[in-house]
Length: 283
Image (cartoon, rainbow, N blue to C red; front, side, top):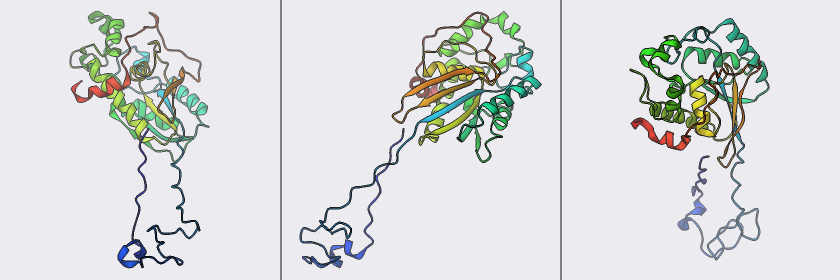
């Protein structure tokens, strides 16, 4: 996942400098006639091999959608706007926290939206000492002028199924004053790759984000059907030491809930994570 730099040799011992040594001496601590200094621990004059590089362990990234909110109950578009977690949402977070209590997290990231931050902090309550960092790249899709509007209003302007297909395939231009599919995928890919880089030495990492954001990420990582994820659904990505990514589970719920998919799941023209990341600020 990352390069390991070779240690730098030092020459602060006076015998390391030709002027400070006696050429041709072969006694203890002296330079032998071939110019190589003997290692006192090796009478044959052959230096010890360099220590092996540190052993990397696999990285497991636990992707969790935030708890259920009032806007979720009211079927309102909730992108960069926010609403409070419901009683059922808090119950779901506590159930997920219990399910993840024995996972030895080494770090955590979340969207900077309050519903995601609160969810992450509650999930980390059984893990004192694990730090949480907020990353705006993990936010939900920006719905622009339709933020907080009922989903029925969206349906009068655009076919929702085609909207989300265009978002996941990076072709949708965006709702008025909203975010294009290409820009959305670019920032999501960059946010995820930052997690892989920050935890290149491996371990278990918690990432709390949003429904469309996590689903877009999963479709970039693997050929999974685009089916909505339940609130506090847990998806786990395993990254092997050689960089291969494998999905261990998708949208598992401690409450046994599933994401609503009234029109069934979609198959997409998949955008590769590396391609979306490369779009950058020009997306």
